[in-house]
Image (cartoon, rainbow, N blue to C red; front, side, top):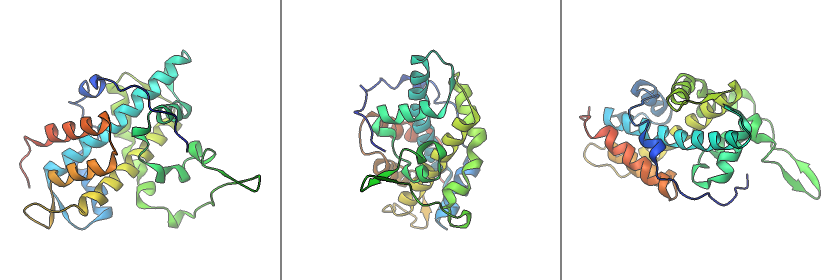
Length: 223
């Protein structure tokens, strides 16, 4: 979808306010990594990946809250999600979810000789693991929403589930391809930092995500 120019950067205080929230537990993160790679995932890598994913969703939720507030609404809806991503191109990092999302499907159509052509429907058996397993993130998403004092309609929770799943799956893939330090059979926190730099093309959100990952893993000893 076509994004609007990114809005002015924030100080990142919203992310800092939820640094103690861990909506995505290590077993869940490791389960996602197992869908992508047979490599061992250290505990420090798992908590770092959780922190990066949390940072992304925190930014999106904050943008959605601003969009809802502009319409004097408190409960977040999918259109607030669209507004948040349109206003901040830095969080547009889960494009593989759009083809499976009712919210985004209508926004990813193209014109061919004046006729609207929609993406082809995919069979259930051909859906990537990130989409099939998106429901695993519901509890974490709801916890993160509560931590920010936000409420959302079920469709919005579903969208955040999908974005979290696709993003973490992409992060796992990049981490598995990272140049290893030490044990080449284990994904460590360094690999998560490298993957984060790949996933976020720049801007303050990349730095906030890297900081969150480092702080989350610095006191965790490698498995």
